[in-house]
Length: 448
Image 1: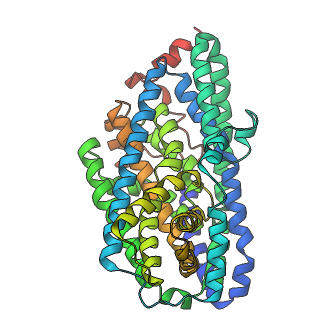
Image 2: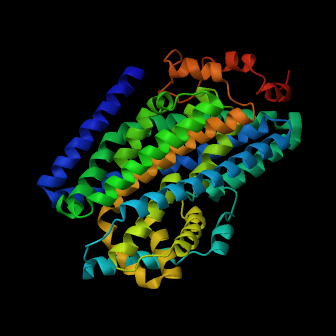
Image 3: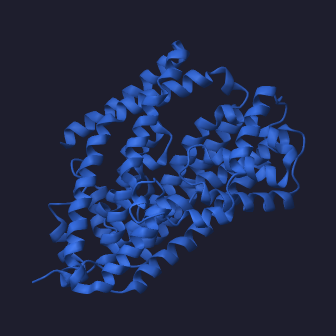
């Protein structure tokens, strides 16, 4: 099966190239193919809620001490805040150095597009965001597509099972079987990846074309270079210092997920696979189950860099440069606002427009300058956010003693391949449970 999945991802590469070709030669046809990409992303989003629920419930339910879960969550959130701040500072420095946006002209079409995005960004408030975390029912949290709602219900269920003690063991086994079913469904959905990638790429190339990118090449290249440097230098150094794991080995291990994100421009398509691969790497279920979903909403390094550089770009392009104090205040607001928009298509653009509307309304029209290339910049945002969450999961696992580095070295060396057929470690799960004590409580809860 692994050989077949290797061909699957080669097919994704071919589909991307064909999509680019169709978009350039027949742009109208390319734009009509957009539903293919939208449909594939929707299929992935369909199983995200159940996967998050099962992973977190199994992770918390098999841990005796609730304090351990709180420690994992606290460390993760603290790390997310620090790294988001670092990303903001890096974007701020690069944006001020290259001074992008000079000499551009704002058209009426771009102005109208900016007004539409500003309306989107102004819709949600902090109170709405917090209330939105609470689902209408326990079941609706798994069906509405909200990562945070699924996270809340899973946490409550996990702690409830933890409090039930041995009586909760049958329910845990049932959740485990359901998790295997959902991962099997995900593996089946992945065979539609080439079709989804073809439609998504053909649509964006057909709608944008090459001419629209020429005048904006500087900001795009600078943004991509900044993201690469952030991941390679900042994240790479921290990962090596804390966990003694080589960043490029980890990124190579996640290569298929990066390809999937690149072809769909959505990091959510790789969320379920990241949880499974982090567990396979040697991170405990508790750490992977809490850190990955939380990071998708709160650890948005790529989005932070995008917001800083895009803001400075717009300010320069519209002839209204921001003072340093204004830059700090506006960007801190955007970093907070972006947490509520995580996982929403076009969230970065809407957050940017909404922040400008609230602080400097005269700059909102400038958002129209980057509407045309936001789809391409969103790919860099998604890739950077994904890399940041992968690194964060390993770091939190190391800090909490829930990371098996010896196993990680075997996995990254190719000695323990990831099972692409089930996305779960069926064969060696018992062996690994015997090697570490992470799942001992689960064994105690099981009937003799």
